[in-house]
Amino acid sequence: MIDLRLLREDPDRVRASQRARGEDVDLVDALLSADERRRSSGLRFDELRSEQKALGKLISKATPEERAELLKKAEQLKADVKAADAVQDEADEEARRLLLQLGNIVQEDVPVGGEEDFVVLETHGTIRDFAAEGFKAKDHLELGEALSAIDVERGAKVSGSRFYYLTGVGALLELALVNASIAQATEAGFIPMLTPTLVRPRAMEGTGFLGQAAENVYHLEKDDYYLVGTSEVPLAAYHMDEIIDAEKLPLRYAGFSPCYRREAGTYGKDTRGIFRVHQFDKVEMFSYVHPDEAAAEHQRLLEWEKQWLTALELPFRVIDVATGDLGASATRKYDCEAWIPTQGKYRELTSASNCDSFQARRLSIRMRDGKKVQPLSTLNGTLCAVPRTIVAILENHQLPDGSVRVPPVLRPYLGGRETLEPTAK
Image (cartoon, rainbow, N blue to C red; front, side, top):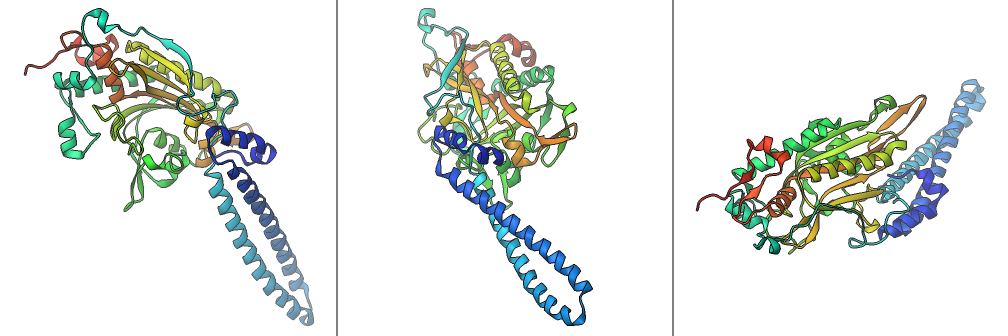
């Protein structure tokens, strides 16, 4: 959540952020009003409590003749205090409810607009000209089936659409990607973690996934648990309700977990193959930093993602995501999009988001810097979303005979294989 002092001191900035996101601007005024009611009801409660304490002292010193009248007044005051306490609780709840609906304040130089209004910052690698090489590129599913690496038919039979099996070299390729990406993250100073995939409501709400993203979250109603769509959620909640010494920052974690997304609103999109699926594995980087270091850490996360995609020898570009396409928690987000030959366009493989203190405030994670205790900043960056990375590798590194060249960074994790070979029919 945002700092309420910012809302009171500069409401126009908050309104501008909401407008840029394409979100409800009237929410700002509703929250200002609720905050005023919360503060005034708190003052009223404090005044009555102070009066009640003062009256208690008078009663203890009163004469028998005075005591009856004072006790009568005390009874009325007791009722007034109880009523004021209820009003304060109601005002607190209303203010918090509205505050949780408000997205993070976007940085002023973030491109304004919707999904297609991003700005391309960098382009890396060379897009292959398959026609010049003398053959037509196959898509990842055709290649994966020939390699006996991907089985979507049985995935659909067992679990429905957008599910799949990775088999044989497909399973080995996933494990190679996970191990290689974790190795890079560990070398960069991240602590590797295997995280829970079922979390309580507060963890999901605290990271900002029960607002605009709620439609894509799986909820187990009987147990009131949520299936995570990214290990960002358990990594963010790892230090929930804690105060961390500033000297220990930055804290960096690389989480591996299965992830689950309903993919609501994507009917008809990416239905072929394993690009957009309901269950997938992912390696996620997560950083806790001093607020003064948040912008620099954001750039570092992006550089680690670029290092990874470069090591996989994939052509990709970096985009500055527009305001209307940011998640609720992000103040700025960079995506790395790999070229997918058979789609003829770049598609998102990784993202890096700066959440400033937004998640830390919601999860009550603070840092102690000398005598000062304040919220810290959190950031997250996808290092390897496995199925999409497999899609990019198969299509970009395919050879005329249907085999697929293995990037050198993965070969030690694939028993030294230099290529993945089609299986005999």
